[in-house]
Image (spheres, rainbow, N blue to C red):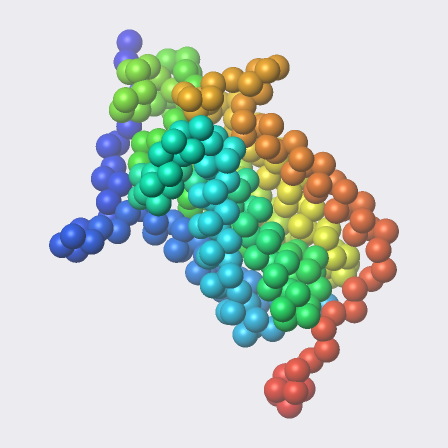
Length: 281
């Protein structure tokens, strides 16, 4: 008996403009960063202030480079170092896919460290605000994965109402794990982070929200990996783990350490008002 759902066969290209093509995947990155910066402009000004709206705008270029360079290099180092060592020109072919969230996260952390040092603002307080916005991009990225018909799930029982047959995936019903990740890593994590960011008592503890994000993402990703088909060139690691789960372990540990550090640290007073903001008030 056939499963209830067949993959809708979306066109991964949104718009064709002559030789130029705009793909859903690229659009998800652009939309995630733009929407994230728009939210960051509001978050950094909440008491205690972690920055200005202008600094949030300036961070756009930094975070874009961090995501793209970190995501690409992370995929190369974590997933296929042997292949790219023998095919170095393939590193530049980003349109063929191959981005790692964990690498992108490291890239953003480095970008934040350099940005906050350059602007002389509190790294952890600024990171708290940035991590509230990150799930927006994560959710959009997973939806783009689904549109592309990639990173599908493991085999599912045909009785599962939303089991789906993906093209080039063996013709068997599978979990639409991209949507599981969009709902958990994206929507659910954003709701948790946004609700926590509304509490001034938590914003006064630099590192708490960033730690909450690391723990939340690590748990959500690890859970979804039980339904996601491992990469064919990696398979399962010792103990039945996947690479995604393995990389989440240090994230969860680091997140827990940040939360403990935040709870034991003095209350953060925030940045003083600028001359323009003082004049407005």
